Every structure is written in C-alpha cells, then in structure tokens.
Image (cartoon, rainbow, N blue to C red; front, side, top):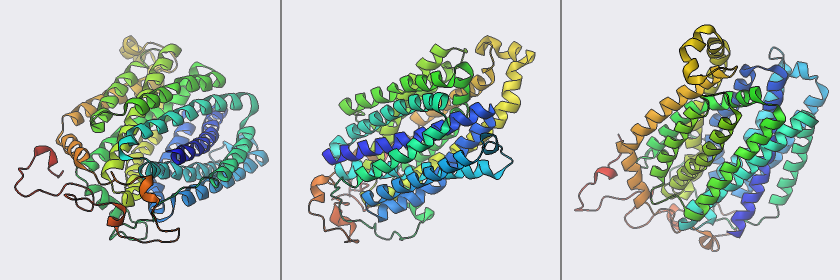
Length: 486
C-alpha cells in the first residue's frame, strides 16, 4: 500500500498539471473567441483521439513494465507542452485562434498530444491497483483514487481560472513544463516490485482491436457494461461541450475556476466515503443507482439561470461520478485477468469514449445555430419559458435537460435488464485476481524475464477457466443470472 500511495500521489501531480494546461487552454480559447463551436472542437478532439489511442496504450501497458510506461509518458508530455509554449510565445493570439489558419490546428494537436500521452498513466494506475492492493481492499483503493483525483481537479480548476484571468496562457504552459518534468524525476525514485510481464496465452504482440474485443466479450456481462457506459458518455459529451460556456456566461473566468474548485470537493467527499465504506456487495448495482441520481441532478440543475443552483448541482454530480467510476473499475479489476487488463481496460475506454466526441462535436453547432437562437426568440420563450425561465443560457439549459431525461430512461431500463443480472453473477463468482497481491510479487523473477504462463501468476483457480469465469459444475442447475449474453 505504501508503494501504491506513492504512485498515486505522483500520478495526481502529473494529472493536475496536464489538466491545468488543458483547462486553461479551453478557458482561454472561449474567452478569446466567445464561440461554443471552438470549445466543442477542443472537447471533441480530445475525446476522439483518447478513444483511438486507448487500445494501443492498453496493449503497451500489458507488454511493458508499468513504471517504464508511466515514466516515458510523463517525459513525452513535458516535451509536448514545451513545444506548445514556444508556439504561444511566437505566434499572436488572434492567429492561433483563427480556425482557418494552420497555427490553431498545430497548437491544438501539440497540446492534445501532451494530454493524451499523459492519459496512459490512468490506465496504468488502474492495473497498479490490481497488482499492489489485496482484492478485499481494491474498492477502497479505488475510492482513494477518486478522492485524490477530485482533490487534483479542485486545485486545478482554481489555478486554471485564476492563472488565465490574471497571468495568461503563457504562464500556464511554462509552469506545466516544469512541474511535469519534476514528476518524471520523482517517479524514478519509486521502486515498484512488479511481477513478471504476463503475456496472455494466444494474445498477439501487436496492437489488435479484434483480440481486445474478444477478451472483453468472453467475460459474461462485461460487454453490456461497456455499452451502457458508452451510451452514458454519448450524453455526457453534451455537458463537456457546453458546461464551460454555460458557467462563463454567468460569471467571470476567475469566479468560474473557483466555483469548479469548490464543486470538485464533491469528488473528494465521494472518494473519502468509498475509501471508508467500500461500494457494497454489488458494485454493478451501485453504478446504476449512482447514474439514476446523476441524471436527475442534471435535469434539475439548469431549470433556472442560477449560480447557486449550478453550484449545488455540480457538487452533487461530481460526488456521484466518483461512485460510478470506482464501481466500474472495481468490477473490471475483479473479473478481468491481470495479464489482460491493459487491453481490456484500453478497449473499454476506447469504446466508451468514442461516443463522447460525436455528441460533443455535434452539440456545438446545434446549440449555436439552433437551440440558443430558438430559446432567445419570442416563440422559444413562449413555449418553454415556464420550464426553463429566461436568460441567455436557456438554449444550453435545454440541451442539458434533454440529455438528463434520456439518460434517466436508459438507466432505469438497464437496472431491470438480464445483462445486469449476468454481470452481477460474474462479479460475485470470479476469483481470478484474488491472490494477485504485492506479496506475490516478491518472488517474481528479475526484470527482463518476459514470458511466463498465465497460471504462474495465479490467473486461474479451481472451477474457473483461463478468463477467471466459473466453469459449469457437473450436475448443477443453470442459474438465470449466469447465462452468457447473446
């Protein structure tokens, strides 16, 4: 646990810095252009490329030692931010934000590269929980992850808003380079006693989306969880594109950054609760119940143009996000064999995040050219003013409300579905990673030993196949919640 906590804090600092740069860029771009089209392009581009790179990143994590991956990613992020800082200082702001010129796209791609490469650390951290933390403590460890990430988000939001408002984008980029470089140096001082690299039998060394899909599909009920999260992210992309413009229309950027910081305490509070109480006997149920409340909050939050209503809604929403994220990670860490977790985690992230860019990129022009003009018109105020009130943000509020209604209906259907019962049974019965702890790593062969059969790492157990799912027991009646998903 001591090693895990050191890795967690190092990742926290790297994430804070990376997101500080990206948040700062988003705030700065909107304030300079006053266009939701620009923010939708930024958010959509990030999510799209994150989805595309998740499987290659996951394959890399399975093939290379975790510390090596995290160190290399941190160095690449520092280099990308250094290039971005040079561009900012050499090219005038009006040229950088002109979508018709190549400078904007180069600046965007450079900062995107830095943020994307750093994201591999989050995948690696999820596998480190499996590797370093005993099975019974993993839900609480995931709560710790959510808690420190929420703390980082809170600090980052305040710093980004104040830095953009008082110091400018150049200072953010310069500080980003120095801090990320410092985290790379600190990471080199952490000794991770990592087990031998486990190459799952039959898995090719190359990046293979089909193989990652097969690994996910073979675990009963897991694909249903991926599909559910994918749909949620499709709706969540609406918030990604519009929430910053919504807040910046109500208050100055400094105040918006501070408000985000205060609301992000919800992440910390949610993570602290999980680290003490866990996620219950069935994290799948916890995930769905958290989503129901999240969508209700998302519907109520924008019904009036109110800063207190926005603040309370964001606070509750962020606390519930921690429960949803920790629940999904806990399920994956229990049912997916450690040797395959990089690829399965990467595949799940790729599929789940691929939906968000679609809605993020689509909602920008829809809001700018249809919803906002409609709600600012006499006809829009006459038809929906009773529900959403009046104000310049009512078009964005309508988008939030529609997303919440659809999300609530879909989550309610998922809670009564057969895949929910199947995955709950898979989670209950799987013991594939229960013996994979830091204690098992002490007997690991030295670094450089590359291949070992899966069974050497405790990846199978009596009554389980190589994926850790229960084998049929002769004479046992089939249970409805253990049938594979068609």
